[in-house]
Every structure is written in C-alpha cells, then in structure tokens.
Image (cartoon, rainbow over all chains, first blue to last red; front, side, top):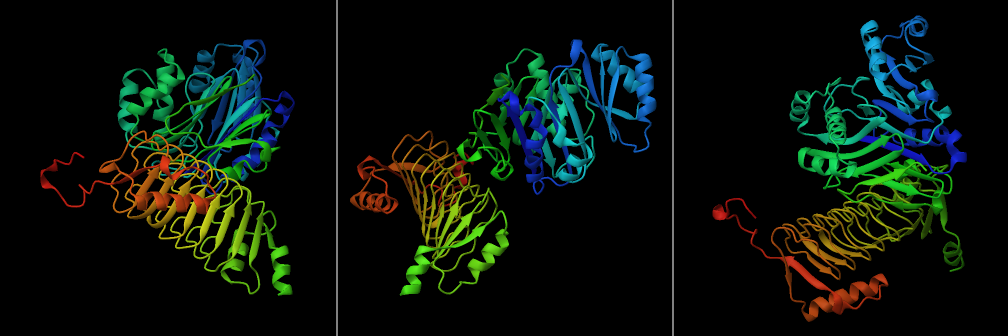
Amino acid sequence: MCGIVGLLLKDKSLRPRLGELMVPMLVGMTERGPDSSGMAVFTDEAAGGARKLSLYCASPDFDWRGFEAAALGYLRNARCEIKVNHCVLSTSQDADSAREWVTQEYPEVRVLSVGRRIDLYKDIGLPAEIANRYEFSSLQGTHLVGHTRMATESAVTVENAHPYTAGEDWCLVHNGSLANPGNLRRKLEKLGERFESDCDTEGACRYLHWRLGSGDTLEKALEHAFDDFDGFFTFLMGTRDKLALVRDPFACKPAVVAETDEYVAIASEFRSLAHLPDIKQATVFEPKPAEVYAWSVQ
Amino acid sequence: MVSAMKEEASPVVFDLKRQSVRDLNQFLHGRPAGVSEVRVENPDGAHNIAVGLNAPIRVDIAGHAGYYAAGMNKDATVTVHGNAGPGVAENMMSGRVEVTGFASGGAGASAHGGLLLIRGDAGLRCGISLKGGDIVVGGSVGSFSAFMAQAGRIVVCGDAADGLGDSLYEAVIYVRGKIRSLGADAQIEPMTDADYAAVHKLLDASGLSHSHREFRRVASGKTLYHWNANANQTY
C-alpha cells in the first residue's frame, strides 16, 4: 500500500501557498505509507535557462558548505540551497556536465532530479516528520507530486522512495506493484537507460520516459505500458507544466480527484482532500480505469 | 411519547473533527436506549464509519465517507450524504444503506441481506460475491461487477462495464443501459413477470422512476457449475 498526492494550482494567487495546502494532503496519507515519503515541486523556471539539480547525501555529517564552495569554484553561476541533507544546486552550466561533476567529485551524493522547474526531496520516516524536516509548508510553485510509501517489494531506503525521475522535469509516483520489473529493467538497460535503485517503480518511470523520448505522446506511452506492465498501478506523473494520472485496467488502487476553478487536487483517498478550500463545492470524481487524465498549468 | 418526539427532532450529533470514529462506533454498538437517530458531521473521508451496527437506528453521515462505511450492517438505516469509499455496506446482513453520490469499488461486497442504494455510479466489482440482499445503482457500474455473486439481486439503472456477472451463481442482475461485455458464463435471459415485479418493487423502494419494462435480465448460464475436464480451461 502507498499514498499518492498531487496538487496543481490554477489560481496564481494561491501559488505562494502550494506547500501549506499540500502538507495536510501528505500527512493524510500516513496510514497508507508510514515508511518514507517524498515530494517533487515544480517552481517557476530557473532564471536565465539555469538547470537545477536536487541532491541528497545519506551521511548526516556530509560537508554541504564545502560542497557549495567547490561548486561555486567549478560550475558557472552556481547556487546552493541546503536543507538538512538535501541541496538544490542551480547552475547555468549544461545539466550533463553538472551531473557528471557532482557524481565524480562526490560519489556519495545522489542526484534525485534535474530540470528547470523541478525540486525534489525524499527521505525515510513519517510524512509529518519529513514535511517538517524539509519545510514542505513553505514550498511555492505551480504543481507538485507527493508520495507516502509502505514498502512491499524492496527495502526502505531513500533511493527506493518516490518520486522517481528520469531526464529533465519529469517524475512519477506509484501506488501498486509490478510483477515484471526485472524484465523491464533488462530491456531498458540494453536501450541505454541507467537504473539507480531496485524498486519496481523505477522500471515504470524509465520505461515511460524512454517511450516519451522515442516520440510517443503520454497517451501512446501509457497504451504501450498497459501491454508491457504486468501488475497494479495508479501512477501520478509530473512534467514541467502538467500533472497526469492513470490507473491500471483493473483499478486495483484507489484515486480521487477534486477540481475547482482554483485547483486540481489528487489523492489516493478523499480524506487527504477534505481540508482544501471550497472542497464542498468541488467536482469530486474517481478516475476510470485505463484512462489518461491530464491537467495543464495555465 | 413526548420524549420519543423530542428524539425525532434532535438526533445525537457526532463531530468527527472533535471525536473519533471509535467513539462513534462504540456509542452505536452500545445500542443507546432512547436514541433513534445519529448524525455524523465532518466525516471527511474517514474509514469504518458506522460499521457493525446491530440495531434499528438511523445514522446520517453528512459528507463523504472513506473505506467500509456501514460495513456488516444489521437492521440499521445508514445514509451517506455524499460519496462512499471502497467496500460500502460490505457484508451487510440486513437494513438499508444509501449513498447519495457515487460509491467506489467493491460496494456491497459479500452482502447477505438488506438493501444498498447508490444514487450515483458504483465503481468496479460492485456486488462481488453477493450472498443475498439487493443492490440498486441509480447510475452505472464498473467492470467485474457481480463477480461470483451467489444470491441476491442487483439493479443497474445505467450501464455496466466489462465482465458483468463473471462466474455468477444464483444472483440475478437487471440492467437498463448498455453492457460493455458479459463475464464468463453470464448470459442475457428473457424477463419473466416475476422479474418485472421484482425490479418494479426495488425501484419503488429506491424512489427511482424508471419503468421496470426497460430492464434486461443477466443470470448464470450454469456451464461452470460442474468441473469439465474437456473444457481445456478456456472459458
């Protein structure tokens, strides 16, 4: 079991309150996922075409200030925003060389996401603890994708926590389980996709990213996924300007959507949506199985 | 008499913003003397609201309920004034459960008796393994509804999605709209006068105005009742 949450703000005046509105959604999914939790937030585009890399280090003693000093010296227009053992590094350098520098100089540091808009945090513990640790209530932006995990098929580690990312400004969270992640992985590794964890969800994330990169629309990529994924899933995906939701043809895992003129909110269960403004006037529905739902930032 | 009238006028109110579901359910299980009506405010999608009731009491849930609302109901009349999560009225024994909005998956699963009325749509697996009792759905039902249903009746005023009535036993389904596909061994059969009368009665009990003449009967072809070694496991 796991919990998923998503929020996309149509009303620009609510964007400074994105995190504040989201935290009760995430905490509401604690019983579905008390092991670990994560959040991908899509902000305004980084200035001047800069890329942002969300970084994480397992060691609590890691010298982030030293890292910052080195980054300032090596990467163009580098900036570090450090929160506990996470850091959002922005640079006007191209994303590949920045990633290469980080992973070669600091092999203990994990690159969680890359993009112009995405910031990503994930950690082990109760959702409320993680929300406090990384000050989720102060997050601002257009939309976000969050997850609370109850591990079923791989260990409770930061790497195995969701959201998963591939490429730039793309992330996915998963409620469910896949029975053929090994086959997906072998197939994708031959095609050049690199894996960083042993969670079944990473296979789904990299599969869809590979499909999108091969020219599929999201709808087409998911049609292929219905054939190639063996298992149960509700996927919530975030792109630079979209949230997209899909449930497997058997709709084994729940999802509820609430939509108003101000926002679109998605959660595994209504109890994570009950606090939202004007929820009583919202259009509330359950997404149908095997149908792709997508909402865009205006 | 005076006190009975007073109770009618003012139900006991539980506010789930301030009180727990356990407080509510323990109160209801205590069969409180003289209380005939309970109103649940701010349900906000909580699980297990009003489960295991065992008395002819009326419970109104003022909002959306989470998993298993009114599960195992016996004798009570429970109304969800909103939507219900998975497994509403699962394993109901008797009484009446009503959902004014939509119900999620597995509505009325394994119910043995009573009436479950869903005014909106029902999700997948509505009435799965139904063992008796009646389900009336004002809207449509999702895929695999009435899977392995053993007894009882399901009335669907809208459409049915894939695999309706797969591996049915003795339960009967009445559908007014389109059926996307029937499950293994389910078949459409002619309506008898007894079928029309049954549908009429259930619609009447549900306050729905459709004509019973618009419904079709789906029941078991009974080809799966006995093991057939020659079937090559393709059904």
